Length: 115
Length: 114
Image 1: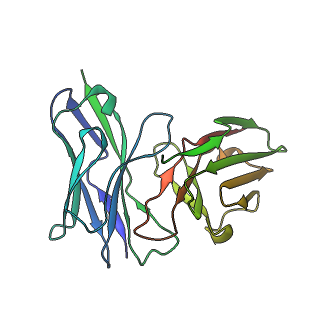
Image 2: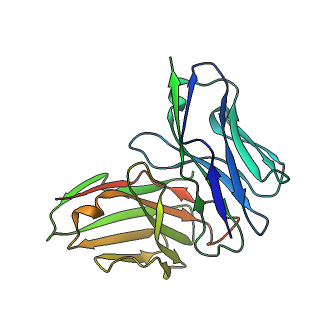
């Protein structure tokens, strides 16, 4: 069965410091993994995705994530936080078993950036 | 260009009203989705259309009625809604259904039922 665990419901960082948002997944098949960002009162924007190519994935706005199969993790990082990064972040998994019900969402991590 | 367009952005309706949410994509995607999102929660899947045919209905009440007039358009017809149906409704699309296709979301329609 597929599942996603976002280990922190809220992360707070100072502007200019690194960001780490943690995600662990469970999947019986080779998974596809995604990070989406949702700014207040907005829809979901795709940050990056892993689909069995390079394990280090670079996304938009300086974010990247590393797929670690041995640890079943897909943590999201950014070297230096910007005020505009304050948002809700969702880690998402899908695999060929999920079929048409394509995505399993984590519960989300709210990122606060302190000036 | 990965864009899914939703209208209206905001909708307030009474419990006896009939209204519709609209969604459009011009990426040539053959799968389209409706999700419902309550505050501080992840989105929940409502419906999936594949090649303009309804393939998944996640036990959604009949007061929500989806329609896919063509491969670019997706509607959600609303009738006799309840206040607890107030939420953000997100439309999404992907090239095809299933992994590893990426799902792209619209900005959403904020629905308030009074």
